[in-house]
Length: 119
Length: 114
Image 1: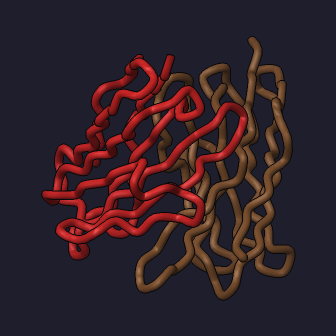
Image 2: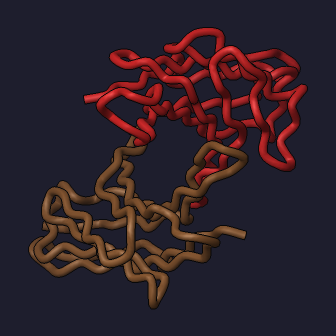
């Protein structure tokens, strides 16, 4: 089946530093990748949608300059949390949707998530 | 706008009990509907889906029927197992400026005891 990986699985950083999270589709090409944030006992909130080779589309209320997204290839998207603060601590999950025409269709495949703790 | 409402959890059941997790939605047009499952420490996995009214999605003993008249997509399983303990998310897929995105409910935790 389709596999999406995230790295790192958890990260602890000091306030003011930047953290980069990688999302990779391992066995399929993903034109579109999504970044979600999950709060305890709350749903996943879509932060942004990235399409390979173009700028990400951010959801309302998500700061573009704080959450930098790069989708430079069909198998890799990165989320960089810049100048992280304790309120950015959360569980970040990515998902990938296959390039049209592949067998998996429009299904989104989710990564295992990255736990970020900002001290 | 589009939204998904799920019953509050946790839902606590004994093994072999019948499970229902309610899900209702609000959407324009005809969205596709999904159930995702998140096991402890893992990402979300697609459990089942339905793309049009009266479709029934099924997988691993779980079922859900797309009911347009009641805007519902309730998840059911006849006999739960301890291994079904997880958080279940109902979601709808909508089109947004030419591409589709998922809107999730808040999730319902299921705890199954032996």
